[in-house]
Image 1 (cartoon, helix red, strand yellow):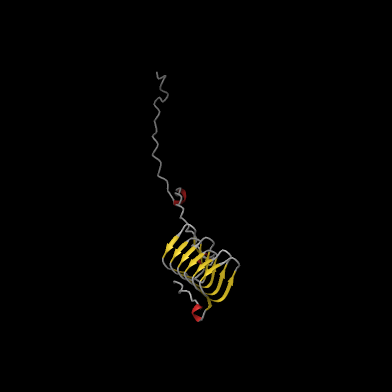
Image 2: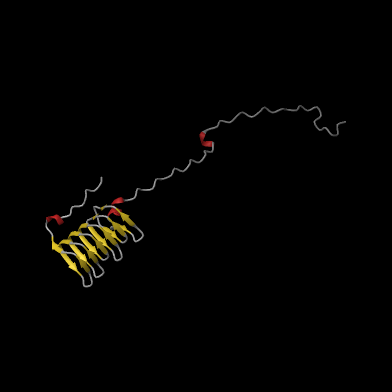
Length: 164
């Protein structure tokens, strides 16, 4: 009696293993491609060049010659000659040396010489030395210990060649 065996004399069939499926690229999940970094655009240096003058801040003291093909603003201290297109020596700034340029504006102190086409001495200017100029403006209160004289073609300041 086979109470517990329901398969009395029945053939047990063993199924054949499944055939392997055809695997195509479409059915395979592709791994996501890594994100390629996008390079940042190069900064426009031409805009930075014409943004304003080079500045020597109040916190700086420089010993040596300064040359620029553009404008320079001095708010700190410089011991040495300065060559620029437009040179501004701010109130409280000190320069020991000669200053050359197309335009020189002095609101601070210079111990040396100024040689420029146009010179502006503001009311806070303190100048010890000669001023060679083609055009000069001296505000009331400016201090000068030196000679002011009209310049010759030597004041036709030409800035150094721009680097490539």
